[in-house]
Every structure is written in structure tokens, then in C-alpha cells.
Length: 269
Image 1 (cartoon, rainbow, N blue to C red):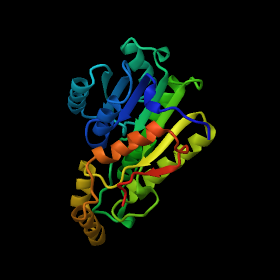
Image 2: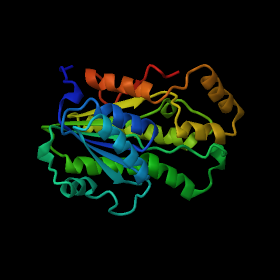
Image 3: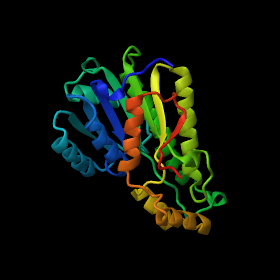
């Protein structure tokens, strides 16, 4: 494999979805400390005030990067919602594609499943479609919009696909989430085959103490799954977000990963 350069060395336009809390917030904070001066971060999520709070955290610690906030709902997949979203961010902030050496999008936004229902109880088409809109359809449409704006294949382009072991291991209560993660990972594998110049890291952070995990623990009605999650907590296998994201940073620094191949954090059980 051709020797690759540390991804954090280039002035970069970085978009991060689900950046208002949990893993997304941690990604934004740790990446901001690594990228060079005048890198631009676009923090994307539904809760604009929470994004502003993350922005303040970043700018207080790394004032030499620029942080923009973009209110964004990945489940809004109506006509034209994703069209020109990054062109408008550039023009609205007097930026140009030519200002950057590299472009990165981090697909972190996701939602869990109604854990009170089993697979054969999924009979509401709106509920099923809404879950896939957030976990799959919206991600694909945003990814397309990103690369329509940043189309120069001569420049470095990077995708970080936040994945999960649940994309390959069936987990009760998480039917739609498992299916969505599996589909996202395969989409990335196809993208890697079609566009080999794009660096794609599919990364599974493990069992992380986030609001999503707490929601699954509260809502799951499968006794075996509840017992497994309790065992993880009691056994110290549920980590804070900072731990797997530090591993993610190391992987991007080394830049030896194979495109779109599932990569696990050391914290994975």
C-alpha cells in the first residue's frame, strides 16, 4: 500500500453530524486539537444551542480553528433539503473550495430503535421509514451533497463512517438500528470501490456511555439483552466517549487503514 500522510496535517474543511453531544461532541473537540490553523469545522445537529455550547468549548481550547454551526435534521429527506447545503455554507461564510487542502465528513448522526418492540411487531411504515431516513437515507443524501461540492479528486477527501458491531451481529431490540448500520457499511464499501481516491474509515467505537445507550437500556424489553448490557456496565466494558475517539485519532494519524473495511476500537467487547 502506498504510504499515506497523517490526515491531520492538512488544512481541512470538516463536517461532523450529530456533533451536539456524546461521540460527535468528543470527535469535534479531539479533532480540533489536531488539525492545523484555519481548519474549518461545521458542527451539524438538530439542537442549535447544544452545538453553540460545543463551539464555545472548542474555541476556548483551540482558538486558531474556525467553528461554524449548522442546524440540521438528518431525518428531513424531503425534496431539495440536502441540495447545495455545503455550497451555501461556503458562500455564506466567504469561503471557497480553494481555501482547503483536504475535505472530511464524519457521519456520526444516528438514532436507536424502539426497544419495546420485537421484529415481528414492526407494523408502522412511518416508524420504520423514519428510522431508516435518519440512519441511512439522510446520510447517503448528505454524503452526495458533500462530494458534489468538494468534487476535486486531486485533493485529499476523507469519510469517517461511525459504525457498530451491531451491523454484523444481531442484537435483540435493535432490529432497525442493526439493519441500518449494515446498510451504511455496505454503502461505504461500494463507494470505496467506485471512488478509490476517497479515504473511507468505517470505525466501531464499542460500547460507549451515551444518551443512545442509556435509552436502549431503559427501553429494551428483552431480558437477555438487558442482562448483557448490565453485565457490560458492571464489568467496565462501557467506556466514556473520549477513549474510543482517542483511538480513532490514532488510526487517522497512522492512515494505514484499508478503505471501508470495518475497524474496531480496542474498547470493543
